[in-house]
Image 1 (spheres, protein in one colour):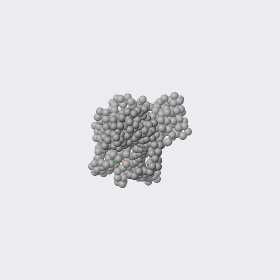
Image 2 (cartoon, protein in one colour):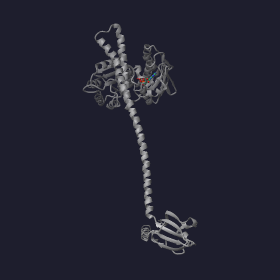
Image 3 (tube, helix red, strand yellow):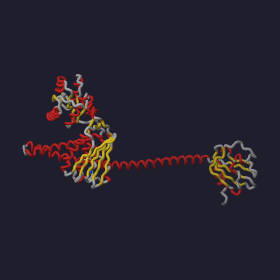
Image 4 (tube, helix red, strand yellow):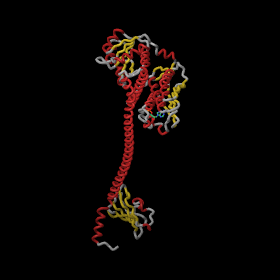
Length: 509
Ligand code: ADP
């Protein structure tokens, strides 16, 4: 390369000097400092003396092969934090020049660059995380949307079903009662008409109960209330209920159990019946020919109830879903149902600490097996708990004439003396006058309601059992009745046996 013009070379030299503070250390062939010139102050060296060993002030020159020169080391720490580009140049007469050019600024900007690079990497990692999370949330939302759409479709299906379910029994109830009112029924048709009205009403009640129960479960308002239950009698009652229904469809119904007549368990009778009713109803509904069996047995501390049928069966892929609310298979088969029976049964069993399992094969039949922990009790213990309390006086406060008449009939049939009151006011007066052994108190009465009447009676010192009677069944209603001073809460409509058992139970406490 040809030489630079002198002015340019001088300019460059001046610039390098200004910006890079050059310092040249000259070492002789013995690697001792022979000379130094330039900006010494920029490099934090201790006092330099001629003759100093190169190893002490410029260790990078040690062990160098002269053939490799010139050499440069960019951005190194030369001494006590001083940063420089170091160039090693051979000296013609032996020895070496060490040229230092200040690299503090460059080092600083490299550091800043590195720091920024680290920050960018960190931000990138965070961005990846956020994107992943976003992806996950999107998938979850999609899934939730799908579930909500499914639930909505199921509920629409449910409403359509319910409308049909309600109308069918109501048609026969209204039809037969109208015929009765217009005296259109022939004497030999009356029994069948009454049976049909009664079974329609029972069906409606179970439907309403199922729908309400599902709502109660969703609100966490279901309690299990146990009392001594004669299991053999309960099973016989169930068989008596289902044998004729099965027969009507041309099916055999079999009860298989070895329980002795005096076997008692602590159970929630209403819920156990609800379970068996749900399972037997299904078994009959989904079986066109063959047999439905109800089997029950116990071992140690567990009770097994099994309902088997020879019906249409359930394919494997649906054997789990049918336990969820509103899930029905093949709704077009035109079989009545709301899709709640199994869901409710499963939830009841969960509350009782039991389980419900299913074994089934399409076109061969199904077996639903209930297993739940139970405590057996002896008849003597039962007698101690519930003594037949016939002859005692019960006051019934109820404003509906049909209901009061029916309850009076139940109680008189069971051997009680009955006093009637048709308002809360009257109930308070009669209780204080006649002091009955127990009061059945309707909650909803005009002027003075049942709860206010109960509060008044407790204030007047009446300390015998008061059982609330109501069609409202939420946990809140029960709580209010308890707070007013009621000992128990009976839900309308109530079966005769249940009412009499509750009265006996509280009289014997
Ligand atoms: P529902 O019978 O009112 O539809 P369930 O919750 O009792 O509601 O049952 C849910 C579904 O499970 C039914 O719609 C039916 O498809 C199926 N299922 C229940 N029990 C049986 C059975 N014994 N045999 C065949 N399928 C059954």
